[in-house]
Image (cartoon, rainbow, N blue to C red; front, side):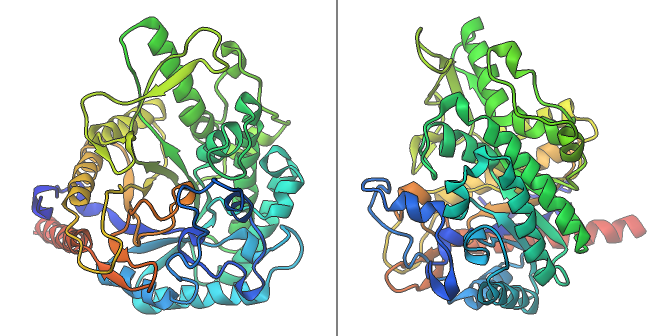
Length: 459
C-alpha cells in the first residue's frame, strides 16, 4: 500500500511521531545508580515473563541513545516520544534526584535537538520505584504527591529545552492489568478493589502538570489506552456488559479530564472512587491535549452467572489478528469510530494526539532487512482512519507509531516485535524495516502536500 493511497488533505496537517519507553529499550537497569522498579520485581518471579527474559540488554539504548536519535531523525519525525523512568531518576521515589541519571536524560534531549527532532518525554511509563509500591503504590493517595515532586525535579533540569510533556502512560492498563488482574506489574489481583488507582493516577497527573507548568511547560497531557467496545451479540445482556467494560476501560479515565466528573459507578453496583473536595476541579483543568493510544477493539459478552465480574472479553469475529492472535484483532474503522464518539460526547474536546498505534507480527530474530508488509497495511489502515476522523471534525493534531524499535514487550519478553527498526538483541544491531521506509516516505509526501495546499491557498 503506497503512501499516496493513504494521504488526504486532512492528514497533511498532522505532526508525525514515533515512540519508545525506557524499561523496554534501555537495558543497563542499575547503571548510574538506577533504583529498583516494580518491573524489576515482577520479572524476578518465576514464570512471569513468557520467555524468561529480564529486559537486559533490551536494545541497549541507555548506551546508544545518540544512535536512536539518528534513527528518529532519519524518519523525518516532528517529535520523538520517549520515557524517563521514575526509578532511575528518584530511586526511592522521594528526595533529591539522581544527578547521573538526570545528566543522562539531559544529554539525550540535546542529542535529539541536534538531530533535528523535538523531544516529547513521558514521565511515567509504568516504572514505579519499588519503594513507592511498598508504601501502597497507586492505591495510596500520597503517591500523587510523590509523583508531583518527581515531575518538578525532571522539569527543573529539562524544562529549558522541553516544552511538551506526557505525564502518565495508559493509566487504564495500570489499573486493569496491573492492579485488577495481575497481568502486568505490580501483579495484584484486586478486581474492583483496584479502582482507587484510577483516581490517584489522575490526581498524580494533575500534580505533575502543575509542576511542569511552573517550570515553563507549554503543553501537558496524559495518554490513555482506549478501545472501541463491541457487544458480541445484539442482546440487552451483551450491550450492558459492553457498556460496563467501556466505562471501566475508557470513561472513568476520560470523563474527569474532559467533563470534570466521573461516571456514576455506584449506579452499576461498583464502589465509588476516593474523591476529595477539590480533586475533580484540579483534574478537569489539567490538560492542554488529550492523548489516545489505540491498538484494537474489544468484543465483550455477558459473563456467566456467579462470575466476580459482569463481562467476558472474547475474540472479535471476522477480522484479522496481529502476532498476539485473537487477543489483538485488527479493525482500523474502530479507531475512527472511537475518535468520532469521543468528540461527540465532548464537543469542546482539546487537541487530540494519537500517542501510540502499531502492531506486532512474527519476524526473524537475526539482523537483516524485514519486509513487514503486514505492519505497513496495519499502519496505513489506521492512519487513513485518523484522516477520516479529522474530516468528521475531530481535532487530531499528531500521530505516533509504536514503536521506533523492536523492544522488550513486558510480560511477553522478546517474543513480540513492534518496531519500524529491527533490533538484533544479541548484538544490538539496528536495521530499518520496509515499514521504516514507508513511514518516512509518508511523512515526506504529507509535508509536500501541505506545502502545495498552502501555496494554492495564497493564490
